[in-house]
Image (cartoon, rainbow, N blue to C red; front, side):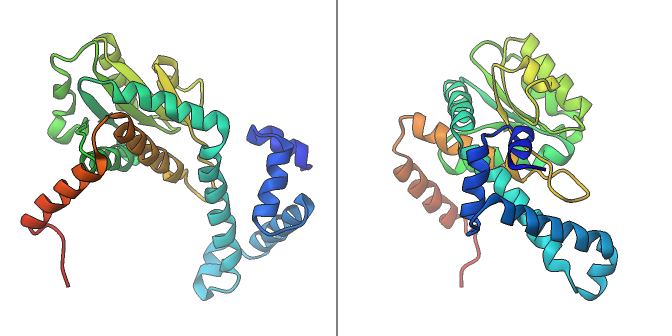
Length: 247
């Protein structure tokens, strides 16, 4: 594709494609396109399973996947996406009770979000359906409470239904999702849209995971707490519990 065609599909300006090429230490976008075309030809001539057996040429697959993921993650820092993250963090930071929801492939994102927040002095309850009791945590919730729901296509039905139940009870939904018209985005008060389309056999959760970390840090910054002192105290408590291995 031409630079403008690719930029249009990616939802960015053509100058962003030029900056990407320069970030990769290339003079022009055409140089990047030529390298990518060569990698595709290599893939076509030598299928992935065969390359894995002897390792020859696998660098091209590694480079394509890693480069694609890096671009998708870097996109979170662009102005429009940074505004989405800031708006979402504002809703989450003002919550009375905070919940984290993500099932199947997205469960690590929801769990990591809650864990990161806990290390920064804020708690989030994970609606992980352990033992079928996940939704029980929504008893008595309502206006003032917020749930961060993570959903990447194909969307998990249980995630959508749990988020809908929370919304019916007056809970504000903040979504990390891959489309502005996804089921979660349509019910969300604020959404963070991530791209999840690496050159691989599955959709990556890496951009969603990074988005959750950014949100956790923004929430901590908006909390008004002395985050440095909070983290220092949490680390002291964990040291007393001998949680982490020491040399």
